Amino acid sequence: MPSPAFEPGRLGPVTLRNRIIKAATFEGRSPKQEVTDELVDFHRAFARGGVGMSTVAYCAVSVQGSTDGRNVILRPEAVPGLRKLTDAIHEEGAAASAQIGHAGPVANPMATRMPALGPTRIFSPLTMRRTKALDDADIARITDEFADGARLAKESGFDAVEIHLGHNYLLSAFLSPKLNTRTDKWGGSVEGRSRFPRQVVRAVREAVGGDVAVTAKLNMADGVRGGLWLDESVEIATLLEGDGALDALELTGGSSLANPMYLFRGESPVEELAATMPRFMRAGFRLVAPRMMPAYPFEEAFFLPYARQFRAALDMPLILLGGVTRLDTIEQALAEGFSFVAMARALLREPDLVQRMQQDSTTESLCVHCNKCMPTIYRGTRCVLVP
Image (cartoon, one colour):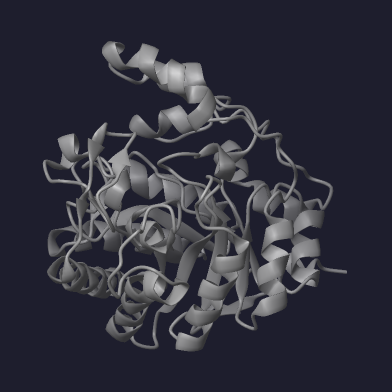
């Protein structure tokens, strides 16, 4: 009997050939803020390898919204390259999604040459500087930037856009009670803290209309004391569902500012990350790394217990992310009511894993969860065990 993992699935107006999505993983292949042949080949491999949809990350809605100045920027001159990328994915039978976002406090102002932004003035351990707090004009401008970026993604041939509401990037920072201590209408209660992200989601939906699927990557928990946790994130998800602008939620967790390992699980590649830094920063990084990058034991489908809370509270389609490496895990998630699963590191190790799972249901990922792929993002994200 064919596995339900390989049955077509509806994502809003789009039909995916199966239920497996290549999750967004920063590619490190856009040094001039535009698509390169290497980026095209990177995603072509996942599409050829059998995924239903490949997600391009990270597409910034502005230069200031870039993480380090080396992301694809959603502006008109990027469209021809993005069209080449989506054409390549489509040629292999998969759909293409663009993860769109604003880095906010995660941005490196030394690279973007612009101040990093946040809901309030917060200290960023990534840049050793304080962020600039957004005012009403900034919020209106960035909302427009998201809408404009979504239109360009649609023009570039993307079947879906994924709005980044996770990892303490700008919209996620607004959702966090730890990072957003505003007392105006953009802060305070869950409704206040979610007002800006919800405004962005509605603007993106209006920009792309009904032809493109709109999803959001939402933190279930920030993984830091005082940050967003399940009680409030489920409430935020309920508000997003009520707005009716999303076709699905992809559920994630962790903070790029304070606890990235909460998302990755497995070994913490401190020495490899230190080696990518300027020499004067290495000793300080090693000193703070045990607190900022604690190692978590890897468990298959480690976010599933949290994600079940959302499945119980919502009717909308949900995408399970986090430590999915086996076909029986995918089938279990589908049986529990999740519409799709998203895979990342396992596909970096084996881009054709989905195809081989379809041919042999006993196939398991070779990923060893060493996380040594993390430090490679600055020179082209890859599995270090692949020649």
